[in-house]
Amino acid sequence: MSQQRFLLRGGKVLGGQASDLLIANGRIEAMSASISDEAATVLDIKGSIILPGLVDLHTHLREPGREDSETVASASRAGAKGGFTALSAMANTSPVADTAGVVEQVYRLGQEAGFLDVFPIGAVTQGLKGEQLSEIGAMADSVARVRVFSDDGNCVFDPMVMRRALEYVKKFDGVIAQHAQEPRLTVDSQMNEGIISSKLGLKGWPAIAEEAIIARDVLLAEHVQSRLHICHVTTAGGVEIIRWAKARGIQVTAEVTPHHLLLTDDLANSYDPVFKVNPPLRTTKDVMALREALSDGTIDIVATDHAPHTSETKDCEWAEASFGMIGLETALSIVNKTMVESGLLDWAGVAHRMSSAPAKIGHYPNHGQNLTVGSVAHITVINPTKSWIVDRDLVVSKSRNTPYHGYELPGLVTHTFFGGRATMIDSKLMDKVV
Image (tube, rainbow, N blue to C red; front, side):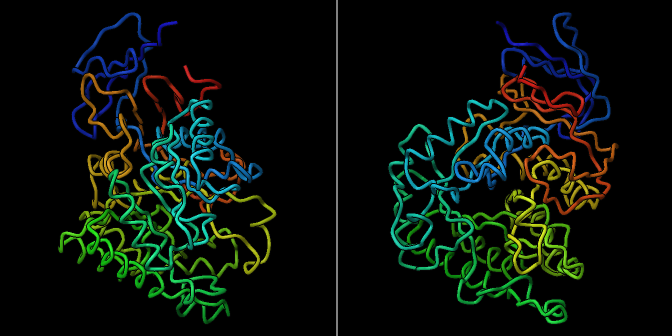
């Protein structure tokens, strides 16, 4: 059966001039002010922004092992709902994705779901224990062709292990993505260390615990001349270290999450564990520094750190609750609110930080391409003039731990195309990809 043809009428590519865009045979076949094609399904997207499909370099899909929280299929649907055409599956599953067999299983589950590409991230160390390197080479050579390795959820705390990992991935231009958290400075920590943690009687999580690891690892990366990626940066001090490292020519990239661009530690005053996340929500000063860093390129990308949890592990006392919040379906709207509406980024900048730059870091072929004739039709459409209210009972994810329940967010993702196939039309997910 030949693939369906779609004619997107009146959208603005990267926010530029309105034009028509024709999708056929999995690619962008034509772009001009006016296109006529009687065989195509016409979609009126006047006033909307056309972006390359979003790429998330940091997603927790939970499968295998915690299918009660999320599955590859349910996360794929949630990703399509949020405008994503590629997700990166973190390794902290059960069993841990530290062998070729596990990463190939996750990769194939993504292929079977069919809503987007799922690229597994391999563990740096066996069992995420930080002691012995995992089967890095075997995962790189596997069907999944893993190029990003991370113990996310845990820090690779031993500097010798971190050095060996950085050296190992050089042979295939891989990257080590570090969860920057000095474990000895964060034992039993519950939230950002500061005035609010003292008032609430919750053990604080100092900024220096993140910054110390960032500083150590950029120096290690410089020493061995390898690629380092810093996961979910949250502090103003961390931003300054990364800025210094880049000025020095060190091969370091960094990400920020949507929730750290918007939410602050004062939300912990509610004692609602939906706001408990690792790393923790920080201060307004940190949020402003993160926004500026994303704007000027010190922070390279936005990554969701989508972390689904069951109600049993979140609807409980703060100290007993799991760390994490979901974010695939709200990410683009949050970036619109914090970065576009503030004037810190234009839509071309959003496309770079949420599509082309993460695809480049991860070595994801066919993703993050320029929207030109002949390119693979991974496409996201957002209507920036429409707002929507987040309802945790209507999310596509299997879990409900969104911190934005009841929030009115600007910008509605209306269409997603994965390889020319529609995964969402007019904000409605397809029962199957067409």
